[in-house]
Image 1 (tube, rainbow, N blue to C red):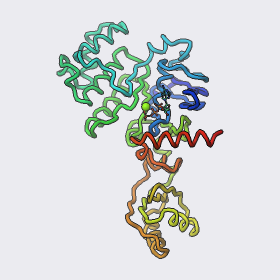
Image 2 (image 1 turned 90 degrees about the horizontal axis):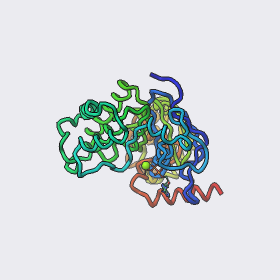
Image 3 (image 1 turned 45 degrees about the vertical axis):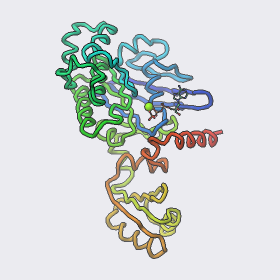
Length: 331
Ligand SMILES: Nc1ncnc2c1ncn2[C@@H]1O[C@H](COP(=O)(O)OP(=O)(O)OP(=O)(O)O)[C@@H](O)[C@H]1O
Ligand SMILES: [Mg+2]
């Protein structure tokens, strides 16, 4: 299904006063791809999607979606896209059918009864057709929003945090729908997430975003293999001292420290583990815990930024502090 470029982003920038939410972004997404924008809270994911879907005007730069300019050809762009917003946007006083019917009229969907039925079946909600949305669970609402986003057969579907706050089982279901829509209907999908495993499972390509900039872009597997095969996660009494020891002993590893955590990435983790534990203990650094796993996209983010995505999720004050620090540093 891979074909030509369907989303083309050039120097796309959005400023809110002094804050640069999206900073001169360049990105090409190919037709038929499932592409992920990955990053912590406040990275600029929603702002990017909002500009691409014409709900927010860029400060500068350019973007084409389905070959239409997002500023000069807004109607054509809107006709070519479907969008599932980060926040819930259904009318909860209406039934599932009524929500879809309203959207179908808005977009003048041909043979709407058949299309509504198809979409409700796709997301497994046909039995709940006449239930008021206020009685739906979070996962059911998300599925209905996906059905609505697809109703008018868009070429590109934007999914902003499609599984945020959902339980693991519902998240899996949504992943399967997303794969199916992509595979069977050839819909190009651009999704945002701060769940690394979601990007890993779904996306052929991912851009890791931090402070509005793409800091890494590749296939998930390639991003991970660049790191090395195993990650050793140490929890130690003194992270700085431990990092100093690693440096002094010329460990051929990459490391980053957050709190008492030190991460060492290596291609021979199993051999290295006992050596590093003994090195720490000989030098008075207490090893409180250690685990070993194959590298994940979470590790990639940590290696690139020295922070974890999850630490920041739900800690808005810290996110803001870091953004202001980064802004100060740029001046
Ligand atoms: N309308 C606005 N006015 C002022 N600042 C804004 C506005 N919208 C977003 N921002 C700021 O721009 C930055 C990027 O926000 P954005 O919502 O794009 O992040 P995100 O990556 O989607 O984060 P999250 O994972 O929390 O959804 C944040 O610092 C946010 O506070
Ligand atoms: Mg967002």
